[in-house]
Length: 395
Image 1 (cartoon, rainbow, N blue to C red):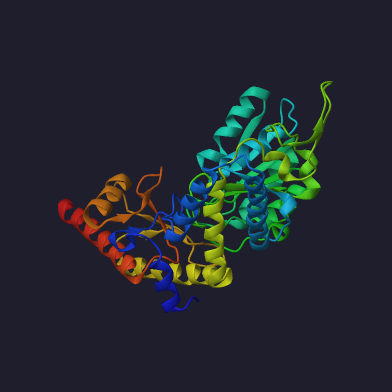
Image 2 (cartoon, one colour):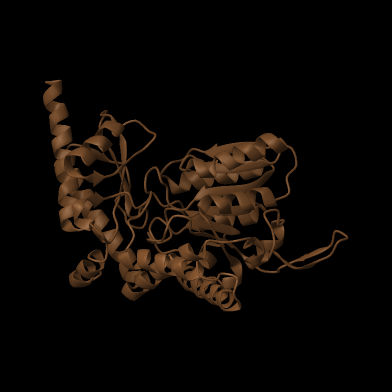
């Protein structure tokens, strides 16, 4: 666990943090002042003479440091990471880089964000492929059983699944699912938008072909930051379709091109280096605390908060209590009450920010290390006041 004093010092590094209770880290994070200042400082720097050799040298150095920080966090090499703008970019880069033939099957789950559904729908329509959803929601064994059955009965090209469900906070059994995918020669892509910075993530242990994530949620980075990991052994399975100037080692005017052998082939054009500077500062701040302590604190505090909400007896907690099966995200069911109405009520009455889900009566709560005991109390009070008012009206 992170020491109380250290948590307080970290929280005090956010602007106006006591004027609201943010439980929407899985959507957009509040940013530490240090991150905002680093972003602004770099933007001012690049606004002077961005065409200078010195600037280009510093951009290259900064990008390598950022990738090194990410590779240390995620147990991979810098050569396996490309910096992108968001999670969806990685999904599209993988999707359109694979070879497709009519009849190929794309395997998803019903935990997915639209960002991991809509690209596949578009691709399936264009190439005559089929999207099939696994419908086991929080049952590991059933999920694996369905997956094996699906792979055995279909020509499956790719399995694209979330690591942590944005709809329930449940951790999918990605290690086992990727192992099954390997056994059936199916490409595995993991959507890590809700996992990186929320729980411990080890690319090598998972054994996936690719993993995509963003910086603006659990990692406190600016919007417009993200990364795509593709395992070295799997890079040649993805044709470099999303490319541009700087993707190549060389090319000629006869149709010949020699692509960069690493994920740098996907880092082309003019990139948002000021945003990368802000993200790097966020990673430095997190590493100063220690990721192991961060993940332990998120897990234990979130579990306590779930227990307390259950003891109120006013709503149901959908997310598993077991920290090995859950994360900093948990979902409550309002027992038939309107989720959008509750979200508006929470903000207008208590400045508590939560996320209504596209499922009736469901509210997503994202608890991070920044959330204080006061934030938790505000959340509990607004749940109690909303649900009590609804009970009174029904009498």
